[in-house]
Length: 102
Image 1 (spheres, one colour):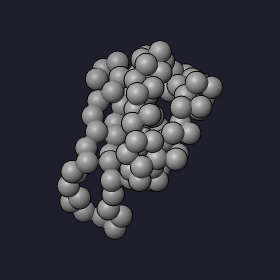
Image 2 (image 1 turned 90 degrees about the vertical axis):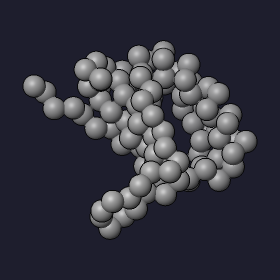
Image 3 (image 1 turned 90 degrees about the horizontal axis):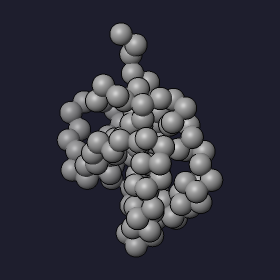
């Protein structure tokens, strides 16, 4: 994970599985186009502490630079594809998290 400088953490609640599958089909080629690295997703995460518990799916992936992350999110092809996610899920958040410089 040394190549990852920006993590993307997302939390979604799938409301229409077919619509979301349309999103998934196009997601990985666009992620790869922008040097993205998919790490994991989890539908059965365990809440240990805190006021707000995640619901639905937790997703984690990353990019080697902020520019790559921004280019992925702002890519017109991704923005068009994201309409499937918006119709097929309740997006709780998509958050960019920078790594510490060492």
